[in-house]
Length: 223
Image (tube, rainbow, N blue to C red; front, side, top):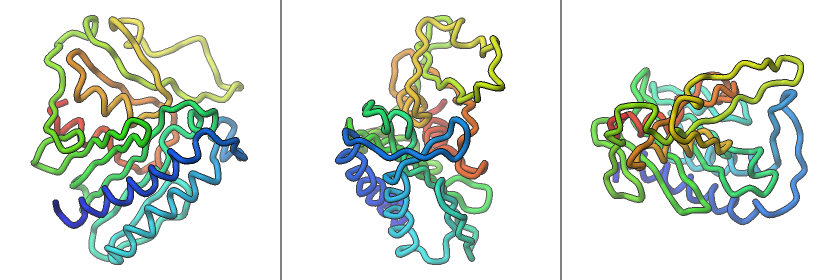
């Protein structure tokens, strides 16, 4: 395992253990926007990840969900969503994950999504395919949307801007599923025998610049 891969796995596991221990607790919730909430656990999980990365790679930049970006010095940049699925987590719904990615300039090197409830780690390295808990995975050979199980996320839309329109893809496929954590349907679509996934459109990506960990390894799996 490469050094940056080892650090990412360890950081995700440490943050995931915190999320798993706390998700059934009552949470103090604050809002970053009308529909974008955050808990103290988001920030604590992020601190654990950022400390691990910065300690191992002090020259790397870090763009994280809940804090100001840290500039880098050598072209490497980490992207961290410490709790993808905060709304689920805050309501005790066990569907959330930790998402981490690493890029060098414009090239994604690593994508990792860790589900601490199911103990599933989806990961991908540039040029080496995607894995689930270390075992190689690949995307479905289903070619038509109408026969696919579609994993998606429904946008967080402020009440003042909602309309009656919605994307057409979920209506066309055989079985749409929404889970409220963008990394999970993208991850699962790489292992389902009849799977697909779409972006959530929630507008909550890390500072508007996060390469989603789920999309990174799903491409490595052939999706």
